[in-house]
Each structure stands twice: as structure tokens, then as C-alpha cells.
Image 1: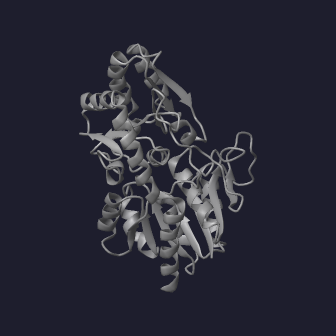
Image 2: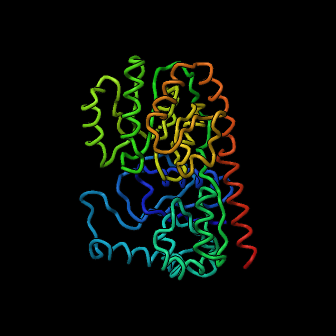
Image 3: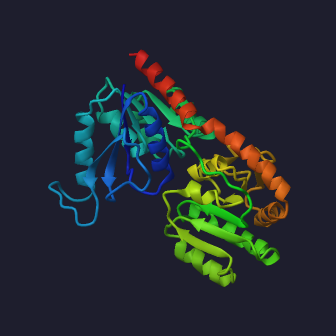
Length: 356
């Protein structure tokens, strides 16, 4: 079976790119798999790509690249239309609503077309009109599955399949470093400002602990200013981007997940895979669907920064509890191993193909 993944870009430091490459690598053990990136923004992908996975792109967006087609969005739409009309694959998985709409309109009908969704439906009218032409929608969590099912009103099957962890072996935290880590894009939805304010309480009580933030983004300047205003420059460190976030999480004893409404992120899964307990908010979409408070994590009421600071401080002071939660984290992560997740995708793909 030939499987094509179509994503906005497979070259950046994004959780959806990481998830797609993890899944593609595992499916490539048994199938012919390619990842098509609409835009190529770097010389090489930020995350490792399995040698069995074919990578190609539609528009070279690297600085200095020359193009024969018109500039901007027209160039992308022309390249995307050409790719879809000439697609030779058994299954096409699209990684963004805009791409899924194009798949519904232009991909050959004999191709099984699956929309992979990580967020809420944002363009309801076009979705209701064109998505019924697809074969299925797959979300990463149950709450998202219910939202998409309500929007599509039984016109299309919607399935919840989580993101896979990359293939092991995984680095394991020894839980002996006085480090709290967090990773992801520095954007408003990640709510790192809440984390920094909460960690100010920890730094005041336990000045030998450090907070490491991995990632980059438009919020970095504002967050650095907040660190300066709270006099945390000796306690909070901006570590930049890394393709090996699990290796960095393995150096930590706690991983913080302060996001408000974001779906389940790869960073949380990767922390669990390293055996590191999570401190998060109970109301956050995604995280609360897989994390089990008291087993692999500590979850506090959404928006309560004071309680979040208290949860961090309590875990900092209780090594025995950290070790117990670390064992629970490894148990939770086992359900997201790449072979188990890929098997669910494979079952869905074969089932959809057999209907034709």
C-alpha cells in the first residue's frame, strides 16, 4: 500500500510535523510511504526522517530560491492542484483543513482520503460542503472527535487516534536534577507567562531549582521581559530550539504543561516517554484526556496560577512522589508507542479501502 502524507511543512519545529514523521516512519516498515511538504523552508527537516520515508516538496520557500510560477499564494495553489491531480497513491492523509478541502475537491476518487485534524473546526461552511467527499476524519483526542462529528452530522466517519511517540529506545530521566522543563512554540496559546509567574514562587522558596524553556516564537521577547521584571534571570533559561526534545526532557525531574486550550501536544507525550511527571491544568484540551492525576501527573484547576505554583513546589519537595509519578508516566506512554498507534491507522486504512 502506498501512503502519502500532505502537510503544510515537514521542515519546521512543529508538533504536527513531528507526529507525522513519527507515524510515517513506523508505517514505512510495511508500506511505501512519502511525506509531501507544501513548503520547504529549510535545507533539511528539523526532525529526523527515517531513510525509508520519501520526502518531497511543492514550493521551495528557502531564502534565495528562484521560481518559475507566480509568487505567493497563487504559486502554492497551482503546485498543490498539480500534485493532487497527478497523485498515485492508495491513501492520502492531509494535515490541515485547507489541505483537506483541496484533497476533497481535486484528489482522484480512487484514493482513500483522510483528514488529520489537531484542532477545532475553524471553517465550518466549506467543511460541511466538501468534507463529505472524503473517506474519514482522524483527530488526536476524543473531545476533538466529538466536535468534528457534530459538525459533520454523521456525513463522514470520525475517529480518534493519538499521536505516536517516535521509535525507541527512549532516554530515561534519573529524576535527580533540580530542573523543571517545558517545550514548544513560544506563542500565546502555550501560556508560558503563567508558568513563569508560578515558577517565581518556586524560585523564591527553592532557589536551587531552574526552569528551562525550549522553543522559539513571537512571545519570546515578552517572556524575556517578564523574566526580567520578576528578577528570575538566574532561574529561568531560554534554551532555544532542539530536534531532540526528549533528550532534554530526560535531564529534567518535572515537565510543565501550562497551555490553556491546546490539544494534546507531542511535548507532553515525549515527557511521559522519558518517565518525567507532568504538572498541568485539568481544564486543558487534550492533556486531561490522557493524563491521570495522581498516577503520572499533577493537575490543578484551569486558570489557578497560585495552585499551579503550589503543585510545582509540592512536587519539588517530594522526591518519593516524583519517582512514583515517573513510573506512572512510563506506563501511560506505552499506549502511545509508534507500533501500537500505526496499527490503528493501518486497520482504518485497510477498512476504508475495502469499502470501495
